[in-house]
Figure 1 (tube, rainbow, N blue to C red):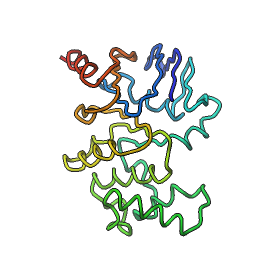
Figure 2: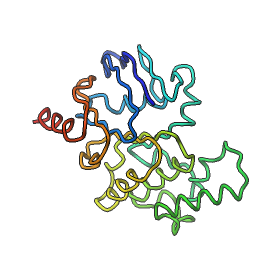
Figure 3: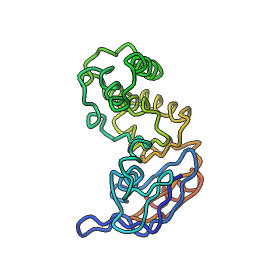
Length: 224
């Protein structure tokens, strides 16, 4: 469960989010909006990467101001650009790096890394230089590095922006199967088909909130 109560975010002289109050218990939630609408800032509130200027953000019972580090251990975050998350030379090393603080036996680390790479079709690239992967493979690697931690909530900011159609479909299939709550910020509206709920932001406010059909219908009219 994520709760925002009268949340404002001000960056410099600009109000990025204005008076957001919303509870998010659903399993699959999409967030849509034009560039500059505040949706990426909202996503960063969910795991303490951004803090409200006023109001409160509560994630899994914890206030992000007081327990940001604990929340980030429970909420995985996937950035738009996977290069921002790839830090180790090879694919397997990069996924294993995510587990470094868990102090797991080497055999358990190997098992978890092998399992997640196999699940997303990267097992044949385990020893491949991570930064030499294709754009789609890099995004899948970034996803593996988050999922190996088994987060309770996964937040994804524009996960298909850099992907071709094939890899976009792979990400969409993954979203349908993931067991945790997933929140996706995206311009890729078909990605939100079948989601439980979609929020539409405009100028820092929620202007539509409902099923994908109703919320995205409002968004399309807004953009027209």
